[in-house]
Length: 275
Image (cartoon, rainbow, N blue to C red; front, side, top):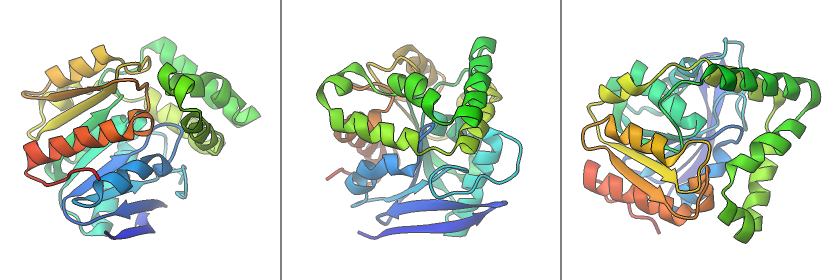
């Protein structure tokens, strides 16, 4: 297994990227307001038989924010240029929560570069006006007062009740990642997500396999949201992860990895089985 971390020039920023393994390239895009650190168990568990690529989206982790206007399309183009830098023509592209929004934007802007799609704990519908207003409120609060609002309002909804009750170390790890999020990146990402379009037409136009993953305890992107995305694509595959909330890949990594590995094996002819 090959493990590496590097920066690749992307537009006006340099995306810091953690990668592991060789073979079929699988790009995983992280949730808000975390970083590629959240994918540790996926890099370790899937990298024996595929190339797991986990960039920090602009502004988060080791990546600079840049000066572009907030947009999930800008973030999607970042990923395309990252693939250029890695010498990858086509890849399986997936994301969790915010990473899912970026994945759908990538499918919209770069459909010829997608081998397969993984959407975890996300939704294809746009924000209604109250949700957009709340994003702007949080953006302004973070810029003026720091991460307190993220810990008090965002963090509790990221983790399901089972994890909170039984896996305190996981909750603590996520809290640390939330607290580490730079205020400028948080505000930029909130505004990018608030402006995202409806993506059901994007899903309906997919010509590649789709896996939708959702935690049974997810209250932010619900099972109903996941079912709607799976129905939008002929033969879309849906996996519901028990005892997980919004961060399925962190809360139940073994089950998440197994779902991804099965998808890669059956739909893409890979041999990606988790350790």
